[in-house]
Image (cartoon, one colour):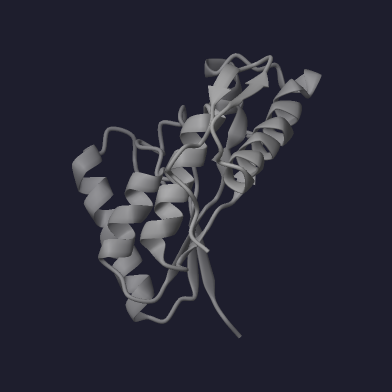
Length: 168
């Protein structure tokens, strides 16, 4: 059996962000040494117990540089909270850096405070449609990174992915 790990990660309100970031990275090193197969890192923006959203590619890139075998995943990238063009670039770059040690988890969100701060009424389902559309746009950009624009009512005109392509 393979063992994986999921964390939001939670820290008491008022914790020092630099200290908690270091503690979380050390935790990833320990999981790697213990033989965990993968670690999924959550993303919320408004909970006081999650003082820094960790799902970002920067945290995972830092964790990759400090580990040897464990595979990291976003648990999840809340698609309506991000511009798909930026996510396409960040995820493609992380995929190239990770050399097979990254899984991209996607979702539409679920934390009430995040819905409020990003301006979504969860009862309408609009955020789910945005998630679907963002994923479709990103996949199109990765499949055909030729110059051009990708259009969407929520994001306006999106340029092509350009030179930032996923590996293999």
